[in-house]
Amino acid sequence: MQRILSAQLSAHVGEPVRIAGWVHRRRLLKSVAFLIVRDAAGLAQVVVTDPAVRAQLAVLIEETVVEVTGTAVANATAPAGVEVTVPVVRPLGAPAAPPPFDLYRPELTASLPTQLDHAPVALRHPTRSAALRVSAAAVAGFRAALDARDFVEIHTPKVVASSTESGANVFALDWFGRPAYLAQSPQFYKQLMVGVFERVYEVGPVFRAEPHDTVRHLAQYTSLDAELGFVTDHRDVMAVLRHTLAGMLDAVRERAGEALATLGVPAPDVPAEIPAVHFTEALKIAGAPADEPDLAPAHERALGEWARREHGCEFLFVTGYPMAKRPFYTHPDPARPAYSNGFDLLFRGLELVTGGQRLHRHADYLAALAARGEPVEPYAGYVDAFRHGMPPHGGFAIGLERFVARLLTLPNIRQATAFPRDLHRLTP
Image (cartoon, rainbow, N blue to C red):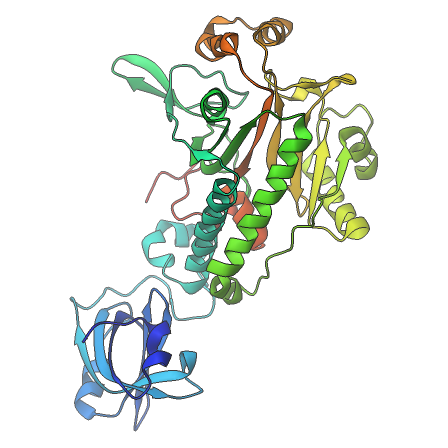
């Protein structure tokens, strides 16, 4: 008899079935016992009336892996409306060591550090695994949305020779006796690949050695990057980003609907046009000084509240950040050169995406580096490519864990990460 998952039991009512999974919960009553088996699809209820099987069940510890054969019977009070009766229970391994917290409870009561210390077990809890299912669905939606627009997926190096991409701190390492660094982003490489495929994207890890110890920062996270050529300006990039976000949320609803239901969180709609405000206007809305060079978290929260109040929207574009706060490769606004053709996308009052139009002329790169007093040599392999013809282009990067945490209203980004790496944590 072939094994089926718990979610498939309803299609086999009245038939003999074989399921397998982990002992999620046991309830030993006087005349009957219940065994709840957890597998990748959910929970299945097994009803035990045979004294011998009941005695066997009494010594099975939660999280022991078992196989159950029996008959599928309809029961509206059971998970998915079906239960397994007249069972034969066979352990598939030694009795499990008791986990350090109860996984059968609706919520994990252990502190987050305890959960992270015991992540291989904590992630089995339906609420923790649900977040990872949403994450997987979001990545699938990201890929599908860009594939539909003729983007090509690329894979770029995560070990690089220089630490020049941004102002973020880097992790240094030894590369056969030479200094090397973990990549802060695929920015340079994805721009260069626009010269090959015109439209590219990547899903991969990035590393930031910044000593942040907050609920919104990780030292390693997954970046969803895209870059496209032959744009008019940053607004073309914003349009692709809007399409991509809509595709990601559609995929979450389709592929992780049960996970959303487990967490009691609906996926918001992305409007046909996401509202946008210029940086100078954003400062006024947030009540910030007119000479403020960047948006603080409090300003972002105020803008999120304004977007909900004025537009009924969870998303807001802020465009035209000052050039002084953007990387050297950012294209300035031709009409207001002190401001950029760059943008951030706020999601529920938190920066989620950074993007914009890039420089594409070799002479402009030389001038931009000179204006910042930086030598060309560390960037030579990157800048030289622009001597050979590059189209106007731009792109964006989405932090996957931050997106999932904000979508699911998780209080800490580590709850959207299987094995987080931060200022203090290198294990498990």
